[in-house]
Image (cartoon, rainbow, N blue to C red):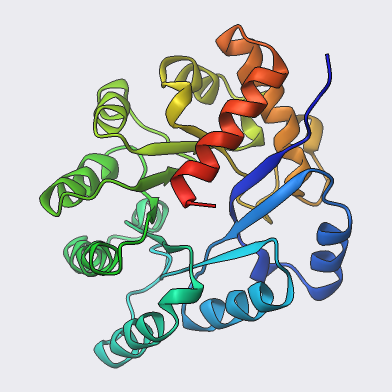
Length: 257
């Protein structure tokens, strides 16, 4: 059976690669039609905008990653003003969410992060853009509450990890999740993919985050999602071509590509 070789990496931090690595990725991206490059802060937003203007395949998302200290009011206003100014060049608001891993290391209050996320949710609603979310385990229901409060319909929970009830809630609301190449060797992610509707599933790398298993020691590359697609096909009991076609269509639909 012919392998169609049409993929979209729905979550990658291209701005965190060096120039040589970015050139290598773009030159060796067989079948990768688009890369959703999410941002970490204002400088990251500016870098992703520059990359998107240079490379047609790169689609930038603008936001503030939650796994870092909150910016002060001046920084926040500057970021939001900048995003609004360049909103026609962005594909989504992101990456935004709540600081799960940061809270595991430090005792920090969550309230300020919830307030900041609510502002991003309102921004996505106002600009009619999808929102890309970092929301893990017990944080995910809190994020769902905000999305439901503002009747958000286009939400992408990237590299989602959480309980079955929250996954069902995400699916019921019509939101999407994405899985990374760790589905090849992580049972938790395999079980999630098995239970979640394939019509609301996407694939990503979250590069340059490194992976283990067969990817150990390798620079994270968008082509790694091919291996994720193969595992999803096996889990769902469908052909690789069918899985590839569905995941590709899901990504195009969600991001209006």
